[in-house]
Image 1 (cartoon, rainbow, N blue to C red):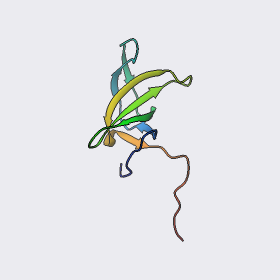
Image 2 (image 1 turned 90 degrees about the horizontal axis):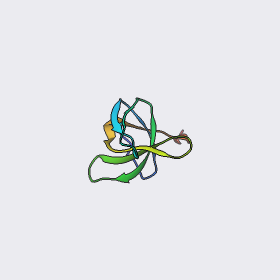
Image 3 (image 1 turned 180 degrees about the vertical axis):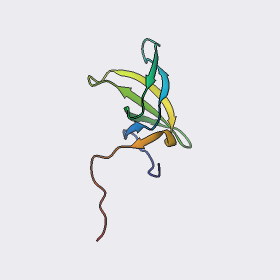
Image 4 (image 1 turned 60 degrees about the vertical axis):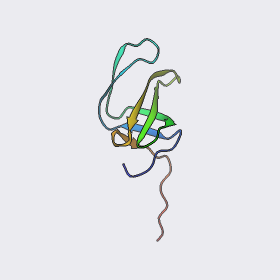
Length: 81
């Protein structure tokens, strides 16, 4: 990924990741394509990403490096003609 991630950026996983449930500690498998939100920027190339259900309840939060994430966009990039 070439674009730097910013706080509150929406990202998708590029690979499966093992995690534990945020509240219960139960083991989870996050799949490629699962989406999350960047909630903290660490020094270097790491980010804390929160994964939540459609109701907004967090089910996983974990540090991930940029090479495991795809930045999702909701507006097209402008180019000069």
